[in-house]
Length: 261
Ligand code: ADP
Image 1 (cartoon, rainbow, N blue to C red):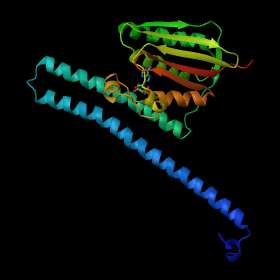
Image 2 (image 1 turned 60 degrees about the horizontal axis):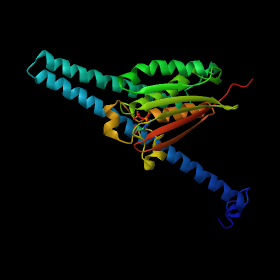
Image 3 (image 1 turned 90 degrees about the horizontal axis):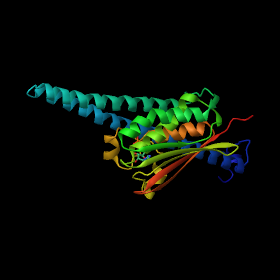
Image 4 (image 1 turned 90 degrees about the vertical axis):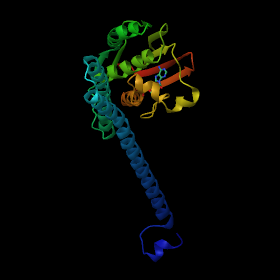
């Protein structure tokens, strides 16, 4: 900077100008990164939406151009319905993330009976586990309370347990255990499923990240579930960890602050 402050007759020392320039550089870098992330997000979102739209279009066209049997129409309509459901979930998740990015997603915090809540989710998912030939089990005591947003807490555990069921082949086991460790409620969701290869583990909470794109798309996954879970946990002052062994299974552990008495 030399004697820049003198030449420009500025009321700052060179040190101060240097610090200011550094802060400015840091701010610009942050802004640039944020623009880059936003651009990537828009790009990925459009890409994800393009696939179901293309499938719907192809199915509708082939039904219209086909021989017109009832079976043909029915099959095409089934595929169209599945893709429409997939798109609807995707748009719902995208809107949630857009709202959370712009701080428009507000939590309604209240006292929640966590034991009751988690049992409700497990009961709701029990038929799915049964259909997939899995044992779904919950271990808990009856008195765990947290302060949280009921809708978001349900969304969080629904996502994690749904994933555990989705990525565990028939004959496997999904076990949920709830422990009260004073300041935190620790919930483990343990499955005996396909596992996550080590090199993928650091990325699974990133938006749109999927270990096996083809496989997860078939099961209706968009790769947004875990990034939404991460947001909900952060917003509640909690923490999530994952341990996995390829071919053996995965355990997600969630810590949520307990109700202060
Ligand atoms: P998706 O909608 O694709 O399931 P998520 O964000 O919920 O997206 O998960 C990201 C990826 O992490 C999944 O595509 C899957 O590859 C992997 N994953 C998540 N949970 C499990 C699990 N319990 N067992 C194995 N893989 C999992």
